[in-house]
Length: 104
Image: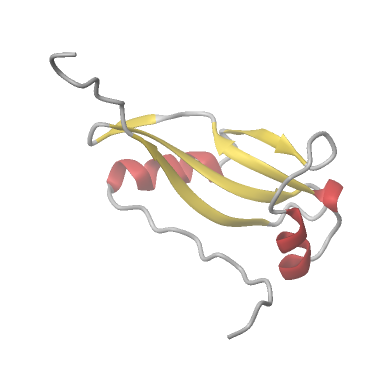
């Protein structure tokens, strides 16, 4: 068993709305949620080991839009190298509403 850093494969969309959300994000409808130059990016050491670059090069990105899909608010998250514009490790962040316990 190896402790070498590895790439995390892109997550595939589960349905058409997620596919459209991903296409929209890749087309530029996105924003930085953590910049390597501003705040320490916890994944930076792994990203550097796998893809190269420096701490300040890597940003965590999110889609600007969040779609309501099957009861969850869904956004796309990934990492972008601000120098090379390489984009890696796309995933879907699904947040389900918290349900309050009944008869409290």
